[in-house]
Amino acid sequence: MLRITELRLPLDHAEDALRPAVVQALGLASDAQLLNFTVFKRSYDARKRSAILLIYTVDCELAAGLEPEVLARHAGNPHIKPSPDTNYKFVGHAPADFYATESRPRPVVIGFGPCGIFAALILAQMGLRPIVLERGKQVRERTKDTWGLWRQSELNPESNVQFGEGGAGTFSDGKLWSQISDPRHLTRKVLTEFVKAGAPEEILYVSKPHIGTFRLVSMVIKMRADIEALGGEIHFEQKVTDVLIEDGPKGKHIRGVSLASGEQIRTDHVVLALGHSARDTFTMLHERGVFMEAKPFSIGYRIEHPQSLIDKARFGPNAGNEILGAADYKLVHHAKNGRSVYSFCMCPGGTVVAATSEPERVVTNGMSQYSRNERNANAGIVVGISPQDYRQDGKTDGPVNPLDGMAFQRIWESRAYELGEGGYKAPGALVGDFIKRQRSRVLGNVEPSYKPGITLTDLQQKGRGSLPEYCLDAIREALPAFERQIRGFSMPDAVLTGVETRTSSPLRITRGRDYQSLNVKGLYPAGEGAGYAGGIMSAGVDGIEVAEALASAMLAAG
Image 1 (cartoon, rainbow, N blue to C red):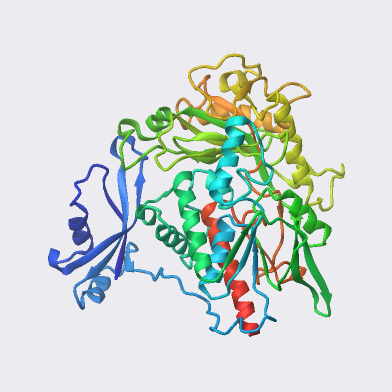
Image 2 (image 1 turned 180 degrees about the vertical axis):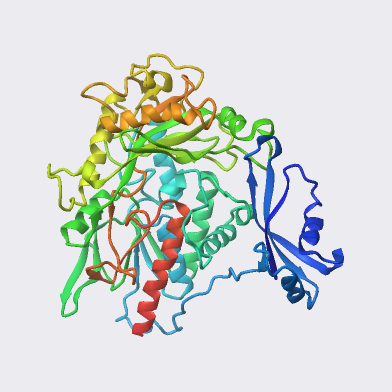
């Protein structure tokens, strides 16, 4: 099998134009020499909006004996090479009698978001029958609770956008791409499992695949059933309140977990797939001496524009093309005060959603359905901050308490609740007013999508600002700068909704090369909550790698 990369065709090319293009690129003598081909990836080049190109990566099967000849003829061409093997290979499998005695405890996975799902799935597929503990509810019940916040302003602290089956990724744009290095093609394993669970097959080849909340719900249910069919167990509304750590001659080792119900589960291997909002669990782990450290993250607002404005700015006369879909963007500005401002989690044709998990605090996030056909585009406009920015002890040097980032987030989430005037309404402002440093009083042509609703205000009130001054200054400078990249970005009617604080975990539960905690053996920090992922794909891949490390340790021990 051969792979062609960077095969470019016009956006409006005929449906049957790809095959002759492949034949020509390979220099084949006849069409008959190409037995079969499949599209591995399709992206686009929109730098010339009036002449957008589709870019294909194609795997080709040639007539017997032709591949060496074609490769030799194109020896200097970096775009014609043998196709890599993208099939997933397990690191091992447990023998049928692995659990023949009760003395061998099963691995435990804490959390059932993307990372926990894939960790549990891989462990189950290797015959290790994981036990999953999820503090929230099953996804359909959780969806009802989440809508309860959005529609009736009623928060369930244990069942919301952050907690429950599917994790925070369930109520998101469902983006299935990542910039992580992936030499083992583990993202392909993630996508393949999603297709098996009901995702459209196009996610295997489009350059920026996404699913959307409604499809993710049914997929999560199917993946749960697969894990259970392989001997795994998933327990919902089972909050882990303590970890049982034993001191031995070779250091500390995990020996089990305690639940809020009072039950204890004996285990020597625990995957911590907590998600970035498990603040009480982070605190408990810190108190138990599990090594962790403060890390950078970002805070800011959600911004909304008409999706049609973004489509026109990005695609020009090709706006609305079915293949291109709703346009996205990625923006960065380096402000004069040294801060970086950038777009985060851009959701084409989506909505801004309430994403808090704690009473009387406001947190925003973005979400899209598979269709991406809502009237507005939204994205986080966030500012990078460092541990020194949020340290709470007043010192200027030395290590920062890993829990200080959570305290910092809570300050601004509580301020947002106050400025929103209660009921989980979010404080909002028009971009034009924000740039002029004045209070917004009346909406323009952009209707905000956030539910339970927004309260127009001055986001930069002296002494009651919605973000630190350095963030306000940087965002105020960045908005007109982004206008130079996307015409209309700083339109006066665009809406800012605050605050976005959960861009990533505020701490890292540091691990070694064996994927285990630096100071507690058998404890495997994983995914976003541990500071090792950011988004569905990277979290899924991290779950796979952690499961492999855990399985290797268990199987080697016999």
